[in-house]
Length: 193
Image (cartoon, rainbow, N blue to C red; front, side):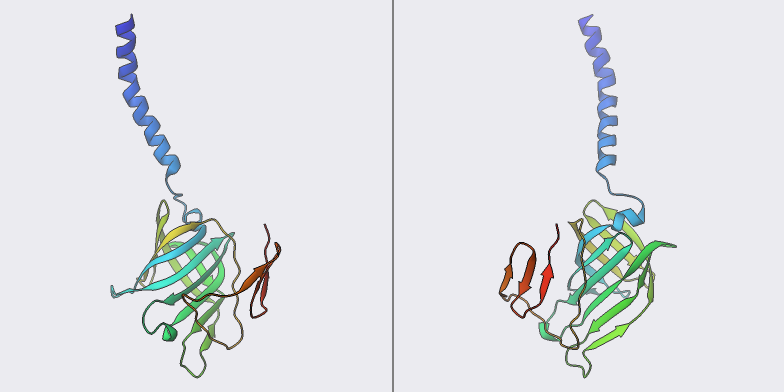
């Protein structure tokens, strides 16, 4: 009886282990619904133009509760002269997976007479491919953007008039009293848990 029991356990054990592994992998895989897949805070890893040229880029994009906010700056030399962009607006299900409406687009082009320019209501359809903490979005134009997930998050975007100033590898003085984060220039941000 003991040998028979071991053979029986052995014969059902392997398929059961395979099924358990499959279920575990399925539970750990990324959401297949595009709206669920994009949710969270993401850091850029790559931007590829429709012509195939890769552009070094630093930035983040946040998708949360039907609203997205994005900011990025090209990472080339001289740093002070690089184009930067920010977009914000709603997102919903769309023909390619996700439809974005950039209600506000801010472009920063240092050295121009008017370094800040604004556009409203630009429409974007993207397809989404997410594998764990890696996500690729492809725009209808052919632009490919790749990201690494930072985590779930909430955020706000801010612009300060016509002044353009880039900072990198620089220290800033700031204070935090447990409720308010205050920069040396006087700007403050309330921190909520």
